[in-house]
Every structure is written in C-alpha cells, then in structure tokens.
Length: 451
Image 1 (cartoon, rainbow, N blue to C red):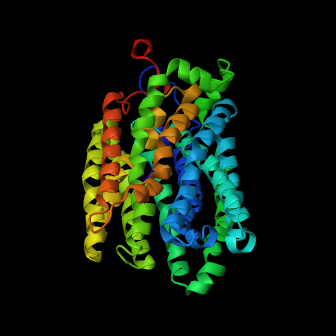
Image 2 (cartoon, helix red, strand yellow):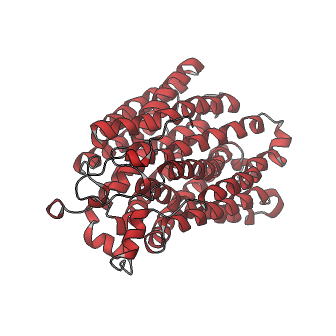
Image 3 (cartoon, rainbow, N blue to C red):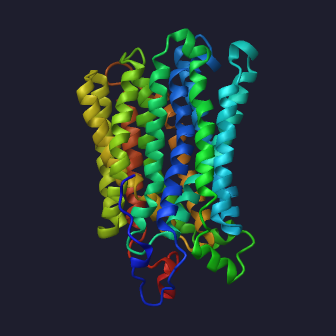
C-alpha cells in the first residue's frame, strides 16, 4: 500500500486522555492488512471452489441444482461456525490479549485450508468426503470469527485520534486484497482443461495458502500488544467472563451490531451466488469472465475502503454507512439485471459501482465503528459476537438465493429483493446507534453520563 501514515506522535490527544507513546499505528495497520489479506484469501478460495467445482467433486447427486445448493451450503457452514469463533476467541482476546489470538487465527486458517486441499473426493471415499469438507470449513469459520475482530480491535487501539477509521480500515483493505488474490489464483486454475481442473488443479490454491500464512505470522508476532489493553490489564481485574459482562452492560450495542452486519449479504450474494448464477445454464457466461469481473470490482475496493473510512473520520460513521447501504440496495438489483442481459461491459460497470464503491462505504467503516461501540474490556467480545451472528445470514445467502430464485430472465428478482431488504435493515440499525468518530479512545463504550 502506498498510503501515507502520519507519525503517531503528531496525533493530538484530548484533554484528560492519556497519551499512548507505545502505539504502533503503521505496524498495526500493516499487520491487519497482511493478516486479513491472507486469511480471507483462504476463506474466499473456498467460495470460488464451492461455486465452480465442489458440486461435482463432493456432491455428485445427478442433479446440478441440488449439487450447487449443497456445495454453497457448506460455504454457509463456515459462517455458522463464525459466532462460535467470535465467542471463544473474543473471550481470550479480552482476557489474554489481542495479539496472541490474532496469531492463533492465522494458524487455524492455514491448517484448515491445507486439509481442504488434501481431501479425497466423493468418488474416492463416498459420503466421508463431504463430511470431511464440512469439518475443514468449520475450522475456517472459527478462525474467521475471531480474525476480523482481533485485527480491527488491535489496529483501532494503536491508531491516533481523529484517524481511527482510516488506520483500522486496512484490515478490510486486506480482505479485499485477499479476495483479489484468490481470484487471480483461481483464474488460471478455472481455465485448465476439465480433467486437470477436477483432478489436481482445484487443490493448488489451497496448498499455496500455507506459504502466505507463514509470511503473515512473521509480521504479526513482531507487533506489540495494544497499549490500551496493557493499561486495562495492569489496572482493574478483567471480568472472569467478558461475554457475561458484555451482555450485562452493552446488550443493546451487540444487537445493533448484529443487525448492522447484515450488510455482508451484499458481498456473498455478489461473489458466490452471482458467480454460480452467471455461469449457470440460465445465463451461460464463462467462469474466467466472471472471475475477472470480481477482480475489477475488488481492485477498486482496495482503494475505496480506506477512502470511505477517511471520509467517515471527517463527517461521521453513520452518514457514510447509511448512504452506502441504501445505494447497495438499489445497485444489487441493477447488477443482477445486468448479468441477466449477458452484456459484459454493463456487468463490469455495475459490479464496480456495487462492490467496488458503494459496498466499500460500509466495508471500510465496520472495523472501526463496531470496535468503537464497545468499552476496552469487552471490545473484542462485543465486536466478534455481534458481527458474527449478523454475518451468519450472509454465509447462507448464496444457498438461500438459489432456493428462492425464480424461473426465466427475471428469476434473479427475489434474490436481489432479499439482499436489498438486508441493506435497509443494516441502515436502520446504524441510524439507531450512536456516533463515535469524535469520542476519545478511553471514553468509547461508556454511557454518556460517565464521560
């Protein structure tokens, strides 16, 4: 990334706010970017494989639709495991530190992805194959459930005041870069002859992930623990069960984060359902063509994410989020209409506007905004628990899409309407939440009467 990072010593601290001389915003942003990039590379190569090859390899039912829905349901299983990962890893993130848990999430994702790449197929071992696939996907889901919260929380707690949105957004820039990387790796794989793709080609992206996980591990282990967490640990004894304390003190914020997190439906509907729908017999576009569409949209998003976050540092989280959510609700309808026409220039244009620009208005904000809604002692748990329960619907959105899809050229309408409603709900949730972009770090999550 070529973004300019201001010196942490240049940040001005509000009156009564304790300076944080040990903060490492540049290093924290880099660790969040690399870790999220490599972790979500793993998470989304699974999505590409589930849309393109897993229906044949692991669910050969003789019915293409049943195989596709089954494969996409295993993609959702990863999201089903994310709340568990959020609860368990959030507990330890608030008890023993953000950094240790962030290292653990990388290792868990790396092992789970390697297992997927080594699995036998249905033809080789029968029903054991999809069972093992689901178990490996559960490992990915548990890891992802703690990754975003850990990377975002640590980056936020290292960030200078007034720039928290920008610095923390690099966790999501990393996610976009990881998805971009996953597509770049899968494009030549998807172009292989059918026999090679189905025998060994699909395994290569999963094997490559191990090398990149090692690189991210080396960066993360050199990052210091967040000063605000050290201060909390050195002061008052942390609650024995952060999750219990969280629901006792900030239950309403957890619910708001959960409903706001429904914005993620746009991404899974776009990336996974959209890929499967566009390459199905109903539309008939090439696999490699639609992967390039995803590349174009996510390339724009890599830069749009920090730009949106920087804008929210100036005007507030809520106006940027609400505008983006409502824009996505309109653009998702335009996108599937464009896909149904088969016009590639039109598809690329709307894809960039939807996933590259409008979606970035939420994707760039949620790492900082969700973190800012919670007090330091329950920040990891609050972020992880609320967001991952919200993301659960996003995980099953591709399978839901195929289940509710109609017939003919307008069959996409129920799917687009479903995604649009999720966007409106997300906007309403944020509208009811408080603004946080100007609240000092030490005061985040506290009732107004105690500030």
